[in-house]
Length: 536
Image 1 (tube, helix red, strand yellow):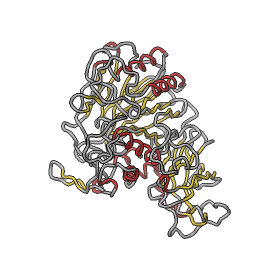
Image 2 (cartoon, rainbow, N blue to C red):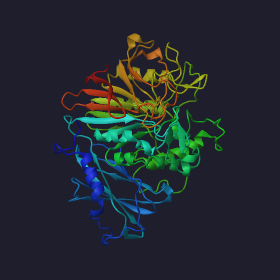
Image 3 (tube, one colour):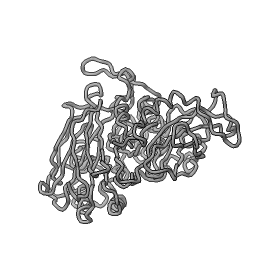
Image 4 (cartoon, one colour):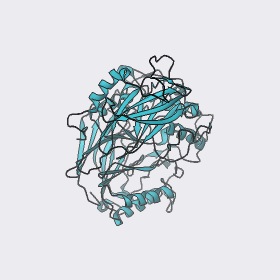
């Protein structure tokens, strides 16, 4: 199941060896300079490496330096780096918080790629730091090759941060050992509005102890504070080890900025001096693009596009990542284009939760997709009623089980399009609600009937508070096949399991198997879906 090429090869064993032997690697020669011997005072990369948005032939390699540095990447078929290919990346500087991305292209499909990142003094290439190594697998070019990936979300939420006594973010080690081809993080990568304190007293009197930083001691408002919030998670050994082995597809949600935010909102939160959600979201989006390798947010322009010090970043989060013949992943942004949270019972709503342009894009790209399976990565659930205060609603559903109203109108339009265009193999994956569940939607149970049946699977959190289950809205006829949730709000990771989902696509039959897992790897629920169907 999605093992490395060559039968018994495993990425986990590779990284254990690479971590121990990285200092002995032969450094690439830059501009004719001799390899450096000493490391003192030279650029370092203590935040590790990441790879994102991997396709059959490409990927983005990310790193952060501790000072100005030239980024160089080498790739090879083996960990010996014999016959390595060298990629000259950007100069990393303060304009991008010393982060940088190098775009790799022309890679072989369905192969294990070994890479190492070298950081060198921009003015003296002989002064180079110790290489940082990683590996990833390109998407298969052959339909017969299996695919495995995980998804989840919600990290460092509700004040539950990196707890060394518990082993930090242990769930990342559970996922790494499952050896997925990639990880889909479905939002709330940080909790910009949730400070991390040194300790929290649990209901039974135990003490939860957090790693703390200056930036995470308050809510994030400035660009520096948002950057610090993204950097906080990279202090965890499990996450850095995971990032060096497993590529990511990353989207965002509300806690990248503030709980339940929407464009145009003015925050009623006394902790903030900057209350304009648009200003805060622009700062967060810039930091988000700096700290994750995302092709549509960070074009391969040498790192110059955001070096002027402006507080907003260009590009967009929504995109499609094509993972070979078996799978396309449609990454949505249900935050940046939505209308204001409200009772959500309007009978006409062209903006909705996606915005008109994103909806047109999604319909067009779904129609064009030739993949066997089309995963719709939705940062908000469809049929779960997520309130925002006493009268307003945060997600799609608003609790009225009748004909579509408000944001449901956009979803109805999309579901109608999927049915009439006979788009096969759609599966919805989401997080957000801090528990795990599986919902099947069918027209015979629904008030709105012009759609084909489909499944929505929910997982998470990765390391955040657990919350009670919310109600289902009957408009699209959901039936809950499985649910596991705590019985009270904000149960800590020490009290309630954390969750991740797993997708296996069989290269022979094309069957897609969904498994909902909890921390430690135990399977709570599984479902097998058949390929080539408009509805399941």
